[in-house]
Length: 60
Image 1 (tube, rainbow, N blue to C red):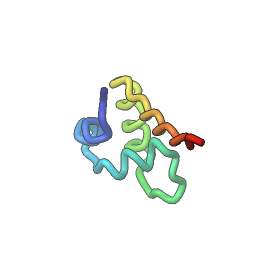
Image 2 (spheres, helix red, strand yellow; image 1 turned 30 degrees about the horizontal axis):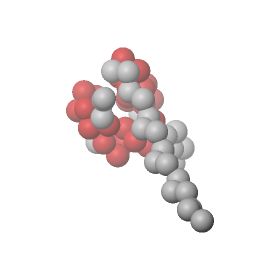
Image 3 (spheres, helix red, strand yellow; image 1 turned 120 degrees about the vertical axis):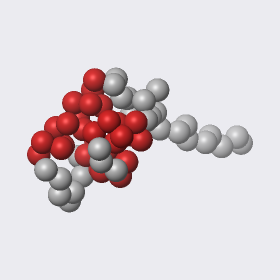
């Protein structure tokens, strides 16, 4: 499984930047070519967002 750290290293940015780009954070100021490079690298490495944790169920 590919991690944000691996994508960040391949593109030359921080893991925070990768996370924010992949989560479509509109407040992030990043050059369009870097944004595109992050997205393309994530796709090329078959990055898949982690599944959310299961919600604990109550046992009554």
